[in-house]
Image (cartoon, rainbow, N blue to C red; front, side, top):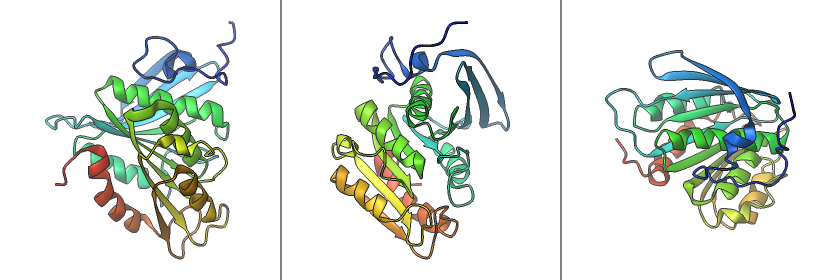
Length: 244
């Protein structure tokens, strides 16, 4: 079987384009999915460069799709839970019931920035295919750089980006967010990436709100409630969804 086109080459990332979409670049050779619960789909996309897994919190039957979605990714080691002991799971449970599907991405090759960006862009395309017109991207640590880069690449369909303990490497183009909403969380005792990394990303972007999580480290294990409270106030505006 021949090798797929080089995923590291610059390509169109417009989910609406019939050519060179992220899923085209991904080169899916097979896929399967199963409903783990009535609203949680586990999807697997097989490619010649590994397995992309998406846990997809779907909008329950009887709830109207809001036209928005959240796409979340992990750090350099991958993962699906996100920071703070499963923040992404909490967000999926909370927001899918309000008409906002949440897609949690497990990379094919963690710590490969180019390939991970394709993975997340493909998840955005899946969300758009199911009716999303506004996307909020979220990324933890290394995933913060993925979220920023895809936010820039996909343009206005990404209404906002949220980072958790982001690295600054890979975020050099953050100014391309062009004033779109940016929310950054960082622990003041981060033992891996100092809080100055988030300050640097905010400075490059020229916009954004940085929330320092007191007495917390890289996994933000003590800040779940603080972050959920901030997101509850912040997300409705960027998602275009009213508060309950």
